[in-house]
Image 1 (cartoon, rainbow, N blue to C red):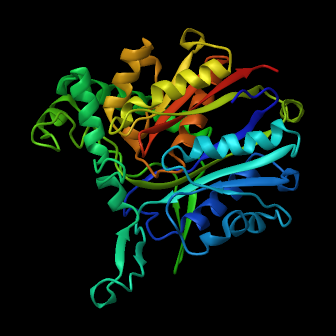
Image 2: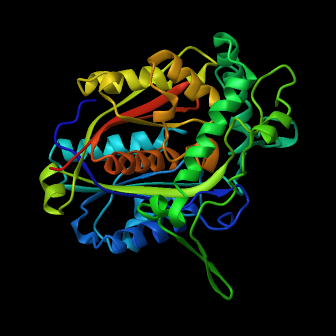
Image 3: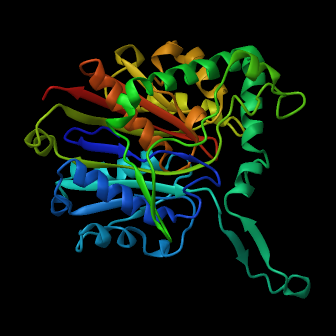
Amino acid sequence: MRLDNVAITLGWSSPFTRWQGPLSELSSIDLAVDVTGRALAARGFDPGEVTHAVLGTTVPQATGFYGVTSVTPRLGMLAVTGPLIAQACATSAAVLQTAAVQVQLGAHRTVLAVATDRTSNGPLMVYPAPARPGGAPRTEHWVLDPMGEDPTTNDSMLATAENVAADEGFTRQELDDVTLLRHEQYRSALAADRAVQRRYMVEVHVPGRKGHTVVAEDVGVHPATPAGLAKLAPVKPDGVVTYGSQTHPGDGTAGAVLSTVDAARALGGGVVRLKSVAFARVEPARMPKAPVPAALAALADAGMDITGIDVVTTHNPFAVNDLYFHRQTGFPLDRMNPYGSSIVYGHPQGPTGLRAVVELIEALRARGGGRGLFTGCAAGDTAGALVVEVADR
């Protein structure tokens, strides 16, 4: 979808924390309220400017049935409503597209977009099945079971990575090399007391019996070294993917305010235009391939090709993803994910892509502007992608 008058006015992310880590007992709805409120206040943004909101989440939480209205009244947006969006790991792209459409059509001038998830303590779903022996219900662990089996192919997500690695002849060493590069890039974002991350990362206040605990930075990032990665056995005995070259589940939230370009200009500073959003699906059990056609579709909608892109960020649950993207497009691996990626800091599902978009914007600002592409895969051999342009006005 081509967009002509849409700007990402503000963007932020919480730290991402490991599965069963310090955010494991905080509802993702409460997390979204805490971080979004603090993000808007720190940026001097008046919540009264927002007239519509979009909430993205993939893991059900208590009170989540009420969707956007479980969040907006607690932010002082008493009259604001909007849809609840879920598209697996492409949820962030879907949330941004849904918000952008409202601005593009002139229905709303300023829209809040929030994505939030807690993979920790995921719900066990119990489905009535009175016709079964003894009326025993069917159960599904909402977080764990989808990782192990796509209902269309019966393949696990890991199998999709191994399938693409086999198709392309990727070696274990190539995957380890990409993983090491992403860790080096992540460490660059920690330099000078996390100067880069402090521009967009908003701390979380976790309530407790003796006051709140502050989570100010990512938790669960494991240091990666050539020797350390080399010691890891493949997850599948005959495979090339290890626990080092794939992401880990996490908890977190991220958000953005979208507006017309004129409204963004009125706030001062550079304008971040959202040029296009697109989605794609590839052949069964080949999920890491999907970011390529999604990216090409987003570029085509924006009237561009990959040669016009300065920086790429990705949601890469497997190093296979970035290696395949590089091979298919020719885009240099070292110009992708300059501040690290989900393979390093983890994957809370819904908000992962939005954090990558925020990091893309920061990377473009650091270089004085330019055009950027985000793309990332999602369950069901799908992917979402978008193009942004950062300029002085």
